[in-house]
Length: 153
Image 1 (cartoon, rainbow, N blue to C red):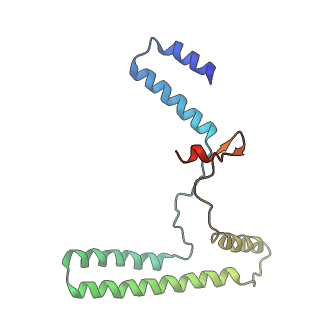
Image 2: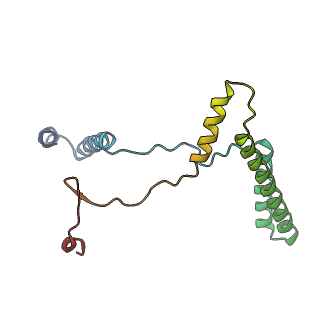
């Protein structure tokens, strides 16, 4: 890093402030990508395999009824929205439990499908695990930093 700083200082003396800023930003991004690990998250974090075309259609109707009751303010539109919400929720629960039952069933005839079914089952089970999150403790040279005098400041 010290070598880079020397070369950066030497090369940026003739550059304008914008060019210097861009060069610094590029190097910072490069170092960030190289040394800071990130967790990749799938694009659709709310992917639910039991939601099919029928449930999506009901969700679309529910969205439209919500906007209708919100803009009109009529009591009848509100009742229609509530009925549609209950119906959609019931339908989604039915498809959810049907999906879970299919995962648990062990009557797969095709031997090629068996590993795929097992993988789906364990992916479903692992989806309930909680991810450890929070702030990790400070470390100094690999040891936990526990200086009570400096931690109160």
